[in-house]
Length: 169
Image 1: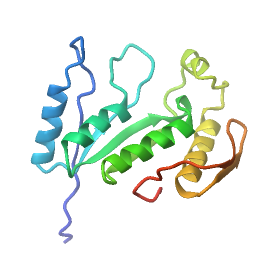
Image 2 (image 1 turned 60 degrees about the horizontal axis):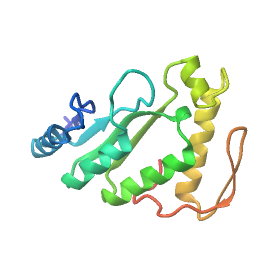
Image 3 (image 1 turned 90 degrees about the vertical axis):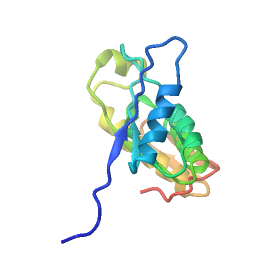
Image 4 (image 1 turned 180 degrees about the horizontal axis):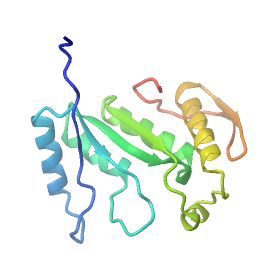
């Protein structure tokens, strides 16, 4: 019988019903989850719509500053709705600030024509944009100078620093 423990994570509260946003309850949950031995804290990504969710990288930067061990995750970034160069920089910075505690999940999200149009995503091209975005991010994280020539994104000898603490998977 295996002696390894199943890792447990906890979904951070991302919605503040107060104006202005009150971070104290979020911080209390994050610190308590770490004290209780949870291995990870998770956020979700929803840029548009009626949700009042806080943006995940910013929120996890706050959580990184008030915790020391717990891993920091996104489940999941709707990657077609993000610029991969900017997101690669944000996640690399968060990984550096947290000492290598970032776990990033990516997906295509739900089909939503008005939301897709707001991000310049052509109909039926979400998967292709996700695939290209992942390739761009991996290149920026692992290559000294990244080059990529795709339908949506083109890089020629682009350098991005700092690199994440962790090796991209």
